[in-house]
Length: 370
Image 1 (spheres, helix red, strand yellow):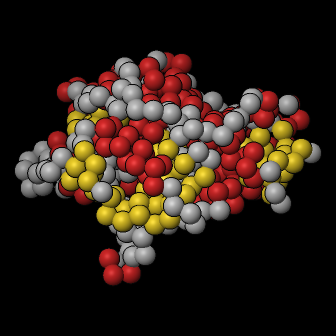
Image 2 (cartoon, rainbow, N blue to C red; image 1 turned 120 degrees about the vertical axis):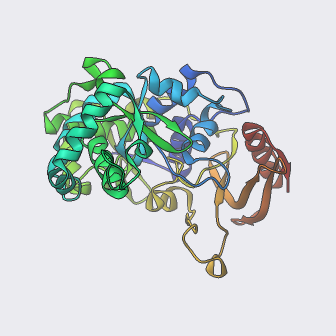
């Protein structure tokens, strides 16, 4: 079994994540390809700087013009599913999720919702089929004839989406607009892969190839495969036996690696970027601490007096190291990106921060106010 130094592994992982070395303006093809390359991109509602999925994608492709993501949804090139939390995936990946989605009617939460509100679910499906896309507000207005209680409507829409009977056509603001999947995606994209072992192998392979190298016991977290690490052992063994993946050691930890990532030259990355707290590179805190020696902390839900780092803190990636964390906010009224505090991990790297902040500000159409 090959052994890699942590520095070698870091360079492979950072290279495989596809960070752009400089600011640019992305076209739809580049955005769709970044989603494909990453496997999935987490969606989050916090807007202290920008929505999580936009920050994560911008670190790879640059500024994303308004309407690009909705355009990719409309054209059936990206989709929303539950992967690593609520996420964007490339629509060609849908068959690997559809079987699990269609089983959601037995889910401990969504199943009871659909059973309890069976008539409401039928009416919602009929209305969207007849009248076109709708958001949750279209089913609000409790007390009016023909309309339904607000929370029940939202729960049923969420259940219909999670079970694959509805899809997200677009986001208006942050609100989902639902439509029939067959209006958005090709039949081949909606055909579920029903072989559970094949699905597990695919999910493991996608997680490892997205990172290049992943600790074997943590692969499940990347795409949040039900059942955890134990469920994936057989899939990992099969992929290694087939030569699709190889086993390596990084320090003391057994890892799975993409042979192509090991074969490719991985020089020290020349990238300085402020990472979204939900960025794929760092969302597994255990993996992040093992590989980068960085203890990632999210303090959004921590009361202000108890926060150590700040409300919305962006780790600073400089090359292949996470060298600090910045408490950042976007003051759109003033047109500036404010760095309220910077906390270094060891030696400071002010030039890296300057470059990363300038790049992020340009992505958001702001100036930097440090």
